[in-house]
Amino acid sequence: MDAVFKALCDPSRRKLLDLLYTHNGQTLGELCEHLTMTRQAVSKHLAVLEAANLVIPLWQGREKLHYLNPAPLQEIYDRWLSKYDRPQLDALSQLKQTLEGNPQETNHE
Image (cartoon, rainbow, N blue to C red; front, side):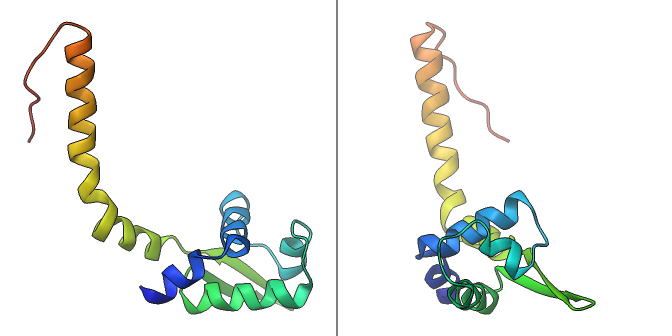
């Protein structure tokens, strides 16, 4: 997971992930069109994303296409973020019910 956090700490790499989320399977040249950095810099950022398993390259003929792999992000969500969702959602639901004058206990399964 350290590689994932390292990859995510850079805004240029997050931008690359956003670009792949919007249009998956892009070449290096296509990705470079949306960034204000050299082709070599974009290639280095992609290498960090690949090392973190956030981007998966796939050769199609002579073109190397880059695909977003959301699995490592899901692992981070499952391990650290998801446990904070339920209490916050319950609190917001309770606040909404109280403000609407309809305080009820929340049912959980």
